[in-house]
Image (cartoon, rainbow, N blue to C red; front, side, top):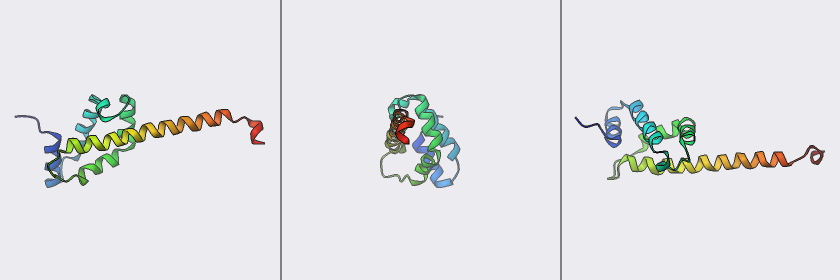
Length: 109
């Protein structure tokens, strides 16, 4: 018997309400296995996104509607957006640290 695709799992979940954990495990395996495909720079970025945005990723399963495009494509587009968000947040954090390092105590007085 062939392994069920992610799309098949989501459709089965939508009809029965069971199997969300299995879907999330499969999503995590896909992202870790090819993080670059989803826009992440490395596995650490992928892990941070999966942890930080777990609820958001889980809601994708509920919002998905079968309109002829597989869930995999919907997931890929959504994860690429999250990858951009992770990179933007990292850049902002680095900018804040850089600004704080440049400000000397004398300029604050």
